[in-house]
Image (tube, rainbow over all chains, first blue to last red):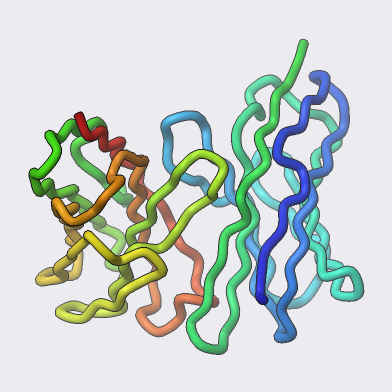
Length: 113
Length: 116
């Protein structure tokens, strides 16, 4: 079955430390890839997206993500986490066949001082 | 300011009552979507509309209904047939009507519905 997997339900990092959130997908076609962030009780905000071209994508708030076709992954990274980055992060995958779009189940990030 | 508005932010409903959640966008987007969010389950698609006067069921449409009479508005009605309606509801829109899989979706702030 086709799926989007975020293996880490919850991650805790210290402020100033680096961060990597994992996202894997299982689709045969070339996917369109997205990362969203959600603060408690709020809607989702787009961090970045990959459609084609350079596989390293820069987003807002200092985030970046790298598409690795061989690993079916689109991991989100930030070199130095700020306390305000504490939130829920969602990976999403879209396909141009059959109008398909799927969200992962999310990773909750806690930032400790 | 362009964006998506959802109202109300919090909604309480008695069992057996229908309730309508509002979603309005001024982005001139063709497509609009409704998602339901439950803890630990991510987002699940309820309905989507790619163009005015047309809409399709998503993965969990049972107990919900929608209309798309205007481009900017996509209200969701949670009917009494929905067995477990307590959840956070998110509305989204995207610019292209025919590209749900490839078009960027932008989200509203959400409505939290609680059934008493």
